Each structure stands twice: as structure tokens, then as C-alpha cells.
Length: 163
Image (tube, rainbow, N blue to C red):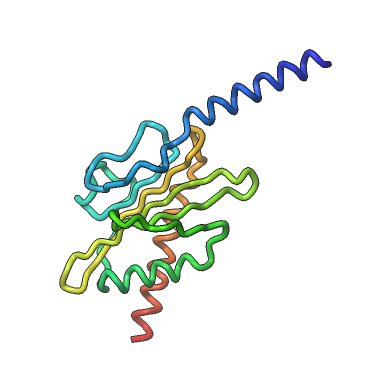
């Protein structure tokens, strides 16, 4: 029995070390106009058509509101999110960064958002959501980005009706 426990403990330590080694570098700056995707599937990129250097997993719509209105509506849609932390914005970056942790293990995911002014009262946004640890994320990042975009659509519809 002690032998089996020792093997299990050794495998757990090796697994933990591999998890740490494969960790995503959250400190690297994100520039959506340069390649950012890596080979692991634990990420999801959503961008307006032709905006990002990488082919996005999802194409984001153009919204008939100013970039400041879009940002405000987006933030309002995030109010219901659990375990979401708005991180301090770097002075040299227009991106907003968020961190959301899983409920049980508290694994952090980083979400970077850039609001894009398309002029003439139109705007859009780019979102890159990725897991810090591991290789797979069971489509958590995909579900998050799609949920956030759906909430933005709901906020926009509500905003349009209120006009």
C-alpha cells in the first residue's frame, strides 16, 4: 500500500511540475495585429473580420455605437460574471485585461479585450481568452467569449430600445 501511495505521490509531483512548465506567459503583451495564438487548444480568439493577424475562431460583428458606448455596454454585461477580476491597465497598452478563475481548482484564465473605433459611430472589439495552465480547457474559453458577446448583444439591444 505504501508503495502505491509513493508512486501516486511521485506522479502527482511530476504532473504538477509539467503543469507549471507548460504555463502560459500572462505577462507578455498582446498585440492583436501580430500573431498571438499558440499550438495548445486552451485558447479562443474573437476579432472583427481582417483585424487580427491570426485567423480568429469567431468573427465579431460591427456595432452601431461609439467605442466608448461599446466599452460601457460591455462592462455592464460583465456584472454577472463570477470570480472575475478586472486587472490594472498598463499605461502603454489600450487593452483591458481580466482574470477569471475556475470554481473548484481556481485555475486562472486571462482575457484581453481591445475596443476598436471604426469611426462614423461604429465600433467593434477583439477578445483573446486563454488558460494559464494545461493543454485542454474543455472549451471553457470558447464558452466564455461567446457568453460575453451574447451579453454585449443583449446590452446593445436594451440600449437601442431605451433610445
